[in-house]
Image (cartoon, rainbow, N blue to C red):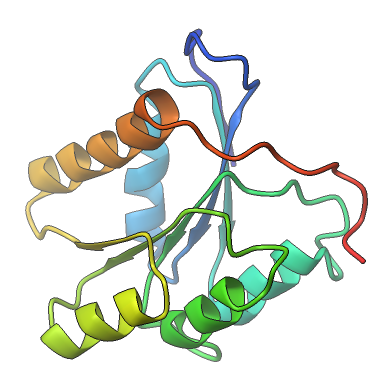
Length: 160
């Protein structure tokens, strides 16, 4: 899932985004928003937290996976949910600097608190309205693609 756009004005080649989401419809919406706008990006999708960790660690079948610049993480997924994945990502020195946005349908106070306690960089409840959903994704994309300065990516050598 690669999406390319025009020049972002930044030195960075492509914004590498890992979308950790089990809902194919939500993934398609995220892809669509990134494709429709002028931010050069490459989106990578995995369906659960276990696959996200395999992607980050470059385990089979992700040996050639790039290091993401941004992670969009759903909470409610099968196998390894987003809560567990967030704790593992933010407790690993290799990955804790990657901005991780919890992007989920849950708006419960306990999920919000536990996500920030686990060092989520932001918590965004998915809007039910399609236009609002697209607006929120555009805001995330613009903020992380145009406004903030992201950490330099370490070498793309295999993770050790």
